[in-house]
Structure formats: structure tokens, C-alpha cells
Image 1 (cartoon, rainbow over the protein chains, first blue to last red):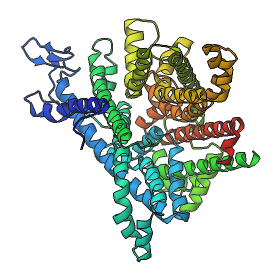
Image 2: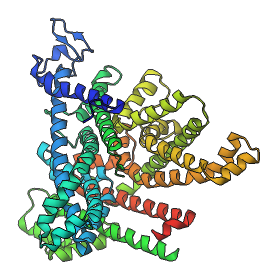
Image 3: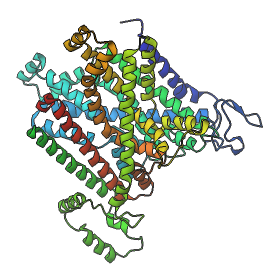
Image 4: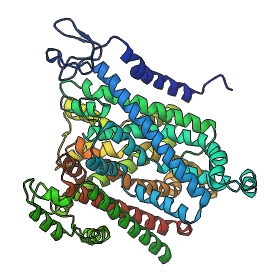
Length: 277
Length: 305
């Protein structure tokens, strides 16, 4: 066990710690209600104080809602959607990838063909088409984002399985009559899982950005529940008057995404692995 | 070479069929198309007559074939909001989207080219580090956030450039910068590593031995070889740029196909959504096909893969 962190890891941990404070600690503090409207306090700047003495650390939006508590709540929403989507895509991708790599033949051709087909439609468009028809909801978003993000896991899992299945420990298990399910669960899964978690740490950032983009377009999280992407869209109309409305959720997104990017890079370097394309 | 082209062509055709199939299921998931077309007070007879006219009383497989036949003709039905074919609405917007995607492509490759050479030529480490960090940071900013930051700086504070609409070249600058710089970090890394790989070749040593200068060797000998991977990856990403146009067009009110799709979603105009997704996916397939074939022409080793 190494006691020291690399510079990249340190930066990643610091950035993610900032986000953890915003998402976990801030909602526990005695702050304003994220839904509480107060029209007389609307559009206050950062550190603004209203005429009746209310202090807002990060200012207020057009309806006089506290930006800090909205940012924190939106962060919880995004993180929740991101984590669930990653879990969904991890399960689907690993399962399909292991099956494709273990059985080969027509099953592999179908699964990998499906992956190619999905990559041939730009992801944002696919998501827009599906949300247009299914309708936006938090659970729906998590499922849709998860189902459309399995390809990276599937490809990596299949690639690793192709070489693992020829190794002696799998061959000997097969010779002893172990079933495919047993082999996949007992021997292949534990071997691909660490790499899958690295893919997941990279994909988490991507999914957060996709969710934010959908919410920016008005197709993701729906009001009154806040989301960073939606807050940016709301702030766009007041860019000249109150730029902090759009900038602060953007900064939150930036910190979260770059934190996870650094984290997955640090993992990749440490384990001397090739990053997935 | 002919075999390679035919194989890629077949793959492209299969993909288009797959896209049409996906579109078919999406439209059927959206509900009964007849119910969408008729006013709510329509009688059962009227509904059934329209269903028969649209072929909706046929078995699902026949419906699928009908849908595919119509899709290949570019017929996705009439827009529910405006009484024009959905396809013509989309096609009207395609030039704007292509203009944005191609300019973004040029911005991305151009910046990677200039910055890559700068990083190679400079003797200052901090310049290299600065460029790398800026590109990395850019990659972590979502397209819409970066677009708004550019609007804030160049339209609102400096008042140099327009923040929305299309028309003059000035209108194109901010959207193309927004979308084109997204993959800059990837391009730079690629360009730098291919330049570094060329450096080790014998012909570079020979050129130095002939007494050519650093700059001349770089520009005259290494560059043509090192550009190939950059242009290929950027070409493959041109397809992804098409996806990125959706958000960029919304940020800058750019009248392209992506913005049309987003607007159609909020108006529940399903034929336009399906036609739009179909057109952009087909453009994506065609671009990838062209890039692959071109790459096969430029680098014969690819054809074997």
C-alpha cells in the first residue's frame, strides 16, 4: 500500500472533496429552502444582502431562490442520476461483453453489431429521440442514460474475455465440466471488474455532462427540481444582468467532470492500462 | 481496394437499415400515429379510415416494410405543426448544420496544427504545459457552458461578436470555437505523439545530416507524415461533431437541424423528430464511410484490417 498520492491523484481528490462538501455537507447546514421563492430578494449578486437583511452567500436567482441551496440540491440530483445510470450501464455492458467474449460465434456477432449500430447514431440525438417519446423523469433519465452507455463496458469486457478464456484456469474449469454461467461468474467477472470500475469512473463524468446537456435543452430534469444544466439554461437569459446564474452551475459541472477525469487518468497510469477509446 | 470499399459500403447500408428499424420502433412507441394526426373529437370510423390509409391495420411486419419503403424515399409523413413534409423541414436546416460542423472541424484541426507546432518549436516548458492544461480544462467544460462563457466575454463585455443567429461570418465565429475546441486535447496529444514518432525515423536524421534546419525538417519532412493520424481522427470525430451541433445550435439560436429537433420535441412533432434523427444519422454514416475510404487510399495498411 502506497502512503503517498501522485500529484494527479491529489488534485482529483481535492476537486472531488469540494463537490462532496457541496452535495453532502451543504444541505445539512442551516441554509435557505431551495424551493423557497422570495421575489423581493430576486437576482442578488454573490454575497448579496437583501434590504431586510437576508444574506445570500452565492446570491439569488430570478425568483429570489437561494443559489447555494439550489446548487447543492441540483448536485444531489445529478449525482444520483449519474450513479444509477453508471450502475445500469455497468451491469448491461459487463453481462453482454462477457457473454460475447465467452460464447463467440453468432452471439458475439449480434452483440457487437448492436454496439456498432448504437455508435452509429450520435449519443445526444439518440437520447433526445428516446426522451421525446418516453417523457422525462429522474428515474427514466437514469435508465435511458444507462441503457445507451453500455458500449464502452461491453467492448472492454469482451476484449479482456477473449484472452482470459484461453488461459489455463478457465480451460481446466471447463475440462472439469464447469458450466458457462459458473465460469463467467466465478472466473471471468472478478478478473474484468477492476478494469470496469476504471471505465466507470471515466463514464461517470460523461454521463453527468450528457444529463446536464439534456437538462439544458429542457429535455432532462424538469422543474421545480433543479439541475445544473437547467440552471445554466435559466441563467442564459440574464447573462448580461447576472452572469453568476449561469456561471456557477457551470463551475460546479467543471469541477465534478475534471475531478473524475483526473481520477480515471491517475488509475489508468498507476495500473499501466490503456484507456478505452 | 475495391473489396475494401464494397465491404465498408455494405456495413454502411446495414447501419442505415438499423437506424430505420430503430426509428420505426421509436415512432410506434410514441403511440398510434393516427391518433396524433386526428383531432380528439374524431369518430371511430374516421380513425379507422385513416388507419387503413396509413397501413396501420396491417400486421406489424408489413407496417415495418411500409415504413422502410417510405423512409428510403425520404417520406416520414407530414409535420404535425406545419402542413409540410417533415423531411423538407429538416432538409431546409441541413446546410446550416453542415456549415457549423465543417467550420468546427476546421477550427479544431487548425488550432491543433498551430498549437502542436508551437509546442514542438518552443524552448520553454511552461508554454507546452500551459497549452496542455488549457486543452485539458476545455475538455471538461460542457459545450453549453463554454458557449455561454464566450458569449459573456465576446458579445456582452467586449461587444465584438454577435451572440445568436446566422448570416455573416462573424456569426459563425463563436459557435465554431465552442464546438471545435471540444476535442482539442485529444487532437493535440495525437499530433504531438505522431510528431515524436516521426522524429525517430531515419529520414529525419538524414535531413539533419544534410544540414537542414530544425524548422525546415519539421515543416518539409515530418509534417506531411504526422498530419495523417490527426486528420483521420478528426474526420471520425466529425460525426460526433454532428451530435454536438444539437446543443451548440440551441446555445447560439443557430437555425440548424439540431435546433429544429429540439424544438420539435417540445412541440411533440414526432415526424420531424424522426426525420431529423434519421437525416443526421445518415450524414454521420456517410461521413464515416468517406473518411474510412479516404484513409484506405492514403494508407494501404488500413485495407487489410
